[in-house]
Length: 252
Ligand SMILES: NC(=O)c1ccc[n+]([C@@H]2O[C@H](COP(=O)([O-])OP(=O)(O)OC[C@H]3O[C@@H](n4cnc5c(N)ncnc54)[C@H](O)[C@@H]3O)[C@@H](O)[C@H]2O)c1
Image 1: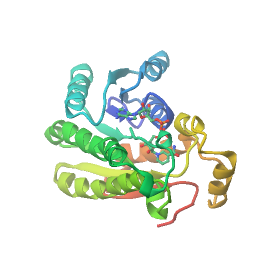
Image 2: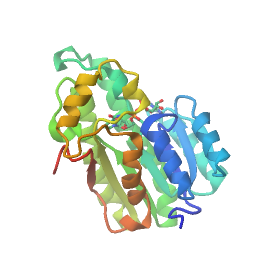
Image 3: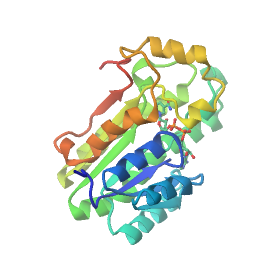
């Protein structure tokens, strides 16, 4: 049985990586999916359509309020509603690890603009439609680094800490409208972003795996089940929570 038949979902950053896996997972459950990415997301959209799903790619920079408003308007124009928002777009692997003293003010601001202001802009832009229809599901993608305080990525880890905090604030403000807001904290995941970044050496990946209860590599598909749970009615009485999906590395 399709858990999300006729629902409309927006996934930011779905041109590749974890976001693309989310888009395919939502489509398999019957949702119509909007791929909102500043890079070309037609491959994800076309693959969903080829599998008899419904999808639309809308070029969007999540840190631009104007882009985000236009993307939500395009979603409603094409599919008539917005039921689910997965705030996945983020700057991560390409940032490159460095000591906090070496992070420039400009780089700090850029990471915050995409990873914190992006989900804020998207939540703001979908809220009017969700409030009007009296339901909605927002799933924010944080990171398990928040619970470990991983060094040499201070701007990134701080941005994802803000996502956990934002999830709680949004849950409180949107609860009266039957909108749930939860987050997923993934562990180190073999997305295109990570696989293309030489900082993530075999040694680094193996030492990360050694800290897990389940000692294997995490792949984007490992996150799809939790995302679908938080996007469907199975999680209707759960809000403001952050689920760590990282093979049992952090336990909180
Ligand atoms: N891969 C990991 O190990 C890992 C771990 C924890 C959390 N995460 C989080 O999961 C999410 C996805 O990560 P990933 O590894 O799949 O990344 P990725 O680099 O493979 O893909 C990220 C996607 O986001 C898009 N994007 C980036 N900035 C954008 C912007 N301003 N507007 C619109 N689209 C934008 C990119 O174009 C890309 O398609 C990120 O929020 C990341 O922080 C990843």
